[in-house]
Length: 169
Image (cartoon, rainbow, N blue to C red; front, side, top):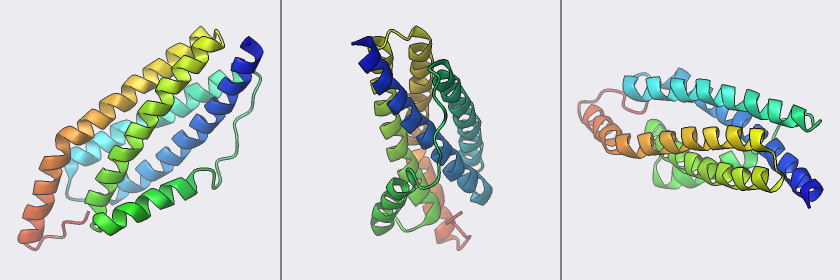
């Protein structure tokens, strides 16, 4: 049972690694493009650093299992494109779209890491369990931060738009 659980854990860790690298790319673009939202920019920058560290920790977990990191190209890009497309139909303004996409993405990550904690337990890999639990908490914290700041970001956007300041970034 442990061997099968370990194989499943490695497969899911590889997917999580790709997800974090895609998140890193997404956050990097967002941080560079946000001009008028310094609180949001600072928090996204902080989460970018967390995300980079998360990928390194996942890489170490994979190495302990003798597994290599997967190629990132296109692995979750279609998922991210679909999420952005769905949000574009509802929220076409860049900063608000990004906040909505980030919020949805963080909740997906919370669910994935909760699942990884269970998988690590089944594989009796306590070190990976601890890593996944730590990342789970970081993702949950980020999701909470986004929802707590959604209203103020939307109000700031609308206020800037009303005063004809470029609000989208």
